[in-house]
Length: 396
Ligand code: AIR
Image (cartoon, rainbow, N blue to C red; front, side, top):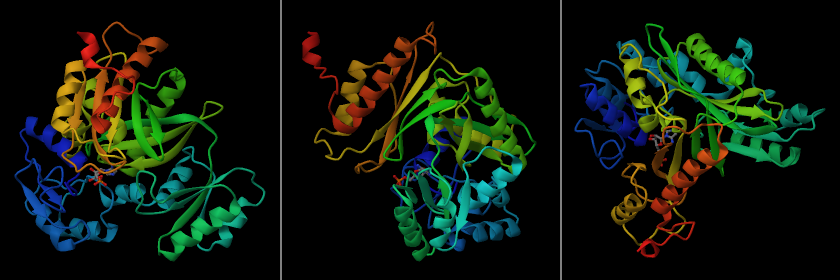
């Protein structure tokens, strides 16, 4: 796996059960995955030599992020390396303009967009439209980086000029009037088998995912079915091998619009580690190894994932002690920590809370309780502070 972050770390965890060894190309021996797998190649994902060393003797090469330059991937393919997803598919997760054009051509719902090669293109796009604008760097961004939500055309033009100046391609699109964000995760194997998990709701703060509710509460069955079919169709048309995440907007009138694609395990699928028969990490491996895919049935009426994001002020209490207290309060919380240094806003772990049997996704109180426990747990782990004022000594 190219990249040694948390996604590689959790993929390694799944690889163990499948009797596989996951080698990682990591930047430092301290990267989350490099800490846990014995088979580490140290190097950069944009160094062909390092990529070749990582690929040597591997059955398949796959990814923890989408930052490997496409031209280097073509070289690996020319060497005879089995790259999954293949570069021809992966480019749609690397280049937002390639993705928008392809999805548009497939008839998939996308926001109105245009390529920007000069700041004046922004004015041309804005003319005649009264929607807010979103300016995006075509390559390189993630977790809200490389995306500017513009107040007005002047600010959009400025953002485009900045991106262009730094040498990156730019695209402008209309801001979608949405109810909420959803995501649908699918997997496809080279054999052509497809599998899809239920559509989830993703809650973002400052461009970063903070919570995932699986399945998305109150989602119309027809819309959910359409989203699943859309993800499988995109996976097929693009020739994806592995997991495909389709980030969606649910529009104010109940329709769906595709936001972004990712071709790797994705934050919106972390709930599957405890809430589905097959986790996204196992499924990604099954797909890239061309095994039959696993059952994606949820194990509970609802599973909520809450990200543990580094606090502004890192607590003095050790993480070990925080975990200890968390388990004392919530014995059923499933904790996944990434072994990362705590920095403000950084994803350092997540908590899954699986709803008790007998509940229903249509029962607002039941869902709210599971959400509340996941949020309390994640905030406790990052801040060493119970947002509901809970004090263990009151229990005595
Ligand atoms: N990642 C990849 N794309 C989006 C995300 N969140 C994961 C990968 C990557 C890690 O985040 O596992 O290696 C990088 O995290 P950070 O906090 O070091 O930027």
